Image (cartoon, rainbow, N blue to C red; front, side, top):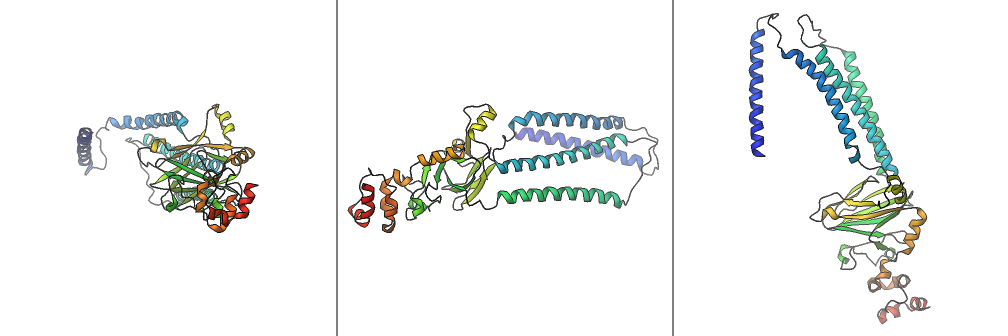
Length: 367
């Protein structure tokens, strides 16, 4: 690679020297002369025609590149804000593309139309306020409309999540995702603390907070269609990034700095399978921040369910406390009565001190 760069440098240097020498020769030829009877450089007409050819061929190549690359564009949007951002993107691209082609067509056509001819007389416009107003005001208005429209869309996306949002906590780690739901009783996530992390409690759920009692974890993500979903995003070790391409969700997971993103999915997994014609299709949550050797496999399956199917799935999930009754020992004495209802009856009895502290709850569970 170094040799190639060196060779290209020599070639470009030689070309630069040739152009400078030619410029010097031309300048000497016109010094002290009002008009030159010397013949026009033979490349004059060929360069002018070359501009037109380049414009046509370049336009065809740009169009071909667009349609050829279209399958690699972002997939169809499957969220409400995704439709809005895609619409804003294509409107902006349309305006930019239109301006690009108009200005470049004028550039190339003018280079051909006004190439040097002996009888051509140039007209100079030292000041033209009307023209200056046109090329200043029109772009300013277009840019203002694009900016303020985009700002409104961005404001809606980054606004506070609605109160009826489904709350899901997603925690990135090398190399996977921990997922926690707010449970079926209070719809509130309990606290967590990194100091409480152990081999079983991977995210450090804090059972001193009664909102944690009904929280449950999952190895896959289920979200309801048409209902606001608030992702609370965390990281345990290094930078990660939550990315749902179909839902147009992307937010960094930063250690020590919780982030969030809320959205409304508008196409269920089954609907997307039918639309794409792929019965085995599933949404995926990927990491888009290179976080180590296992980054490539850091993905988790996401299912977008109909609201009733989502509720049925949630009811099938068991709270973390129910699956790990030993953590009842982590619950403060004054809250153990509330926590006991999440402990299955067949779970091993806790220490006598616990039973003495909450005899009524123990009797209730026994019944």
